[in-house]
Amino acid sequence: MIVAAMAVYPLAAFGNSEKSDIVVIGSAVAAYGLAIILFFGIPTLVFLHRWMLVRVGCIGALLIGLAYAGKDSSLEVIVGWSIVCLTGIICGLMTQTGKRPIRTYVTGLIFILVLALVQFGPKWPEMMQAMAQAGGAYVKDVEATMNLSGSNAGTVARYTESLQGIVDIVVRLLPASTILSPILQFSVGFLWFSGVTVRGVTGESGIRPFTEWRSPFALTLPLVAALSVRLLGGETARLIADNCLIILALFYGVTGLALVEHTLRKMGLPKGMKIAAYLLLFLLQVAGFLLTALLGFVDSFVDWRGRAAAKNTMDN
Image 1 (tube, rainbow, N blue to C red):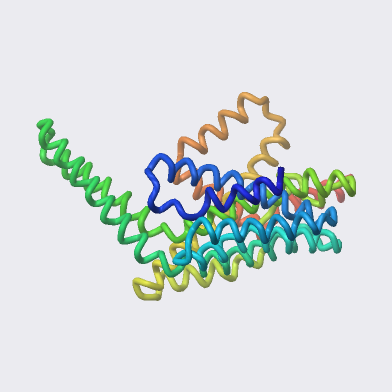
Image 2: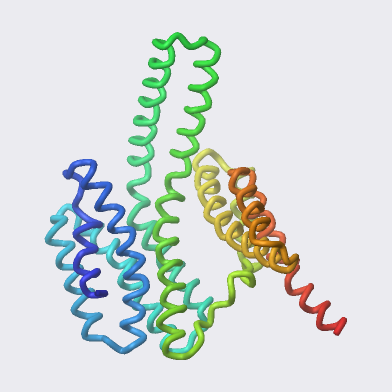
């Protein structure tokens, strides 16, 4: 199954620029899911010493991608496939040699960030311009439709202004969204690999339970740097800082949710009330996300769960 996924992935991920919209969307969805499978499967093959399958699958997939995408997209295929293939090999080797899961995950994460910048960085200006033009055209169509339907001029102005603001935010954060996509795929695949393959061989995954997840204090350094650039830098620097802050906020948000889940379990709330609490966070939308990110940030140096555990130990 893993080798088959290697063969199909380049067909779904590369060379769809001249296809219909439906095919492009379907291929993107398939490529997204296949990448998760490969972030699980390639480390699994390496960890289990299936090197023949790794060599055949990785080289074969690269050749398929190069043949399918054409010469003009060779670099994109090489870098895009390396994000999946080489990251998987690195994680498999590090796990095989007994490296801690967090160290393995961070190494894979850094590798993905570097290659993602190489792959997407040169395209961002063009992608942002195209999205801004498409979004602006959509806002104008909405404005024209509302005017034709007899809507009040003030209402039309307020609605289109809000809609344009959303478009501007989406365009501004486009770089972060392209980087977060492989990060999320890798994160899911790595957890799958640790929870199934590693646990199946060694008896334990090495991954802490979700309720114990906590952002490392070291993340404070890039956070402070991004905030400083956001406050003091020029427009380009602020654009970079905004995208960095969104990526960092996602990690803090996940660990903030872990803290929330830990607290809800400690409180012994019934299942219905826990669902209501998460529903409230969902309904708060941006405010809920910022709240959980703030909790994750504060907990990165306060460590509420560690202090509570230490207090219980002393009391007992």
